[in-house]
Amino acid sequence: MTEKQKKELYRKSIHVSSILLPLSYYYIFHYNRKLMFMVLVPLTVTALIVEIARLEHKTFKRIFLNLVGIMLRKHEIHNFTGATYMMISAILCIGFFPAEIAVAALAFLAIGDTLAALVGIPYGKRKILNTDKSLEGSLACFAGCFIFGLLFLNPVVAVAGALTATIAEFSWIPIDDNIKIPIASGLVMSFVNMFF
Image 1 (tube, rainbow, N blue to C red):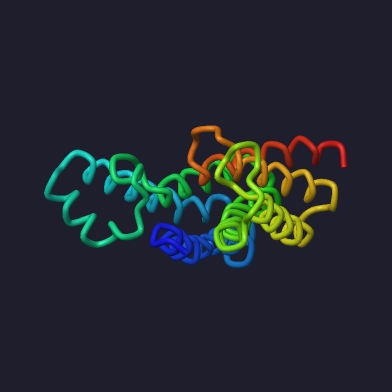
Image 2 (cartoon, rainbow, N blue to C red):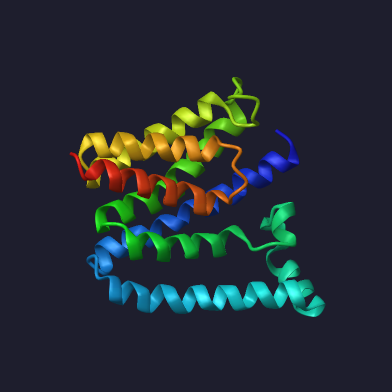
């Protein structure tokens, strides 16, 4: 395993902690949007201020990179980090999707994206559609999302959401996974939920 792959696995092991967002919405805030926003909005605004400060000021950027630079991907050095995109996604999902779908969509990001890397990086042999993503990683992503989805949704909605999250995870669309996975799966689940 290369150093880059080890770093990515380390990132994903921390990434899975983002499951705390949807679980907090369900278990602590009991689907209370207003209370959840009272926590999320200040955190997101703070993250945006930190991002803008580090992108605009060399000294702040140096301090920031010394603290968390080891966890950043190359493109995050000159752009927003995945964590900030995740906070933005959480606000959008909770603000616009039904509560159960918001929880599932955000959990799909934490579970699916993490499993795709944890399985795909060490065991992935079959690449999908000329991407660097593997069939093994995508199957792990789908299985994890579907199983979690069954806890909150009917099976048809769970399958639709898990499949969409999996396609979003391996797609080459140039949007951060932290936006792409929850928003795409949330939109599809909301649509399917109208009929089932």
